[in-house]
Image (cartoon, protein in one colour):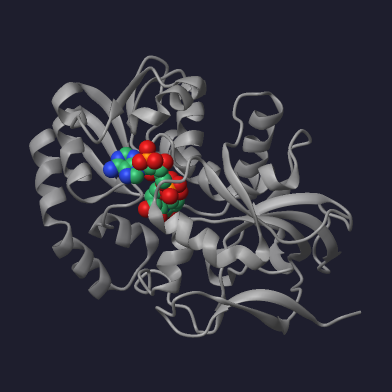
Length: 339
Ligand SMILES: NC(=O)c1ccc[n+]([C@@H]2O[C@H](COP(=O)([O-])OP(=O)(O)OC[C@H]3O[C@@H](n4cnc5c(N)ncnc54)[C@H](OP(=O)(O)O)[C@@H]3O)[C@@H](O)[C@H]2O)c1
């Protein structure tokens, strides 16, 4: 049995691209399963990790293998694992201290994975874990979105937006979204009630009295969200700055909380002025929620949207395409063959 595998490795922060090379296969801990990866998805966090942009939250010892989510087949189980067996088709978002799904194998805690939806290919299943969990945690866990509430989802045609629109509609919300006019048909087919072309229109000039905004852009777009949210409403960002409240909940060191607090003074002021709550979300792996998402897929409630499927040896082109920021849905990396 071979002891090495192909993997996409970064040896130094800001190196132009990861290098695909032979590395040792991961060790399986008692609570892990070993998965032979068929497909993984590209996420903006891969580039942020490569460039060291998340070092305050995720300090990795280099070299590190890139990649956060995957779909594949279980080839071994740890001594404490009873809920998975060799041959199971699974998908997941790995824990943040043990990333590395741009590789032929990953060892992953069994609590971070779920059985793949029966009606999806490995490529389509790999599209879901990171964006599905992020959207679920924003709309369900934080916003507690209720039927009839109004939510704005920024970037409706992106990896996050395409799933978040479908989930928000399932929760019964009225959904506005921003995207290019070229993508209006797509976002409406996913359920969006109102589409705004961000090239020509500032959403804050045309929307008002929103219960919630799901911000995927940060910067001025995030600041403008406070102009449309009602008192008592929520602004949840995955692309803005973490604030001190997040730092406390995430258990970061006091000096990082201080730095977060200083960096988000404007957001704190906007929160007070609008009587809304700002939450920075850093999504968490969660096998139970992934099982819920798989059930939504099997019930036809959500369907992953795939921009393209790219062979593993074209990873660098796929990362460059992701960096350009115009992907429609998810970019999938095809790594291995099915069983
Ligand atoms: N904190 C967390 O836990 C977490 C989790 C997941 C993602 N994120 C972050 O969330 C962000 C979005 O992720 P993603 O996977 O959705 O990215 P993505 O798939 O790369 O987003 C691409 C989409 O963004 C749209 N877009 C570009 N500029 C826009 C603008 N100004 N307004 C509205 N839409 C715009 C593009 O639409 P057009 O082609 O029409 O221009 C394109 O469809 C990233 O910054 C990512 O790092 C954070």
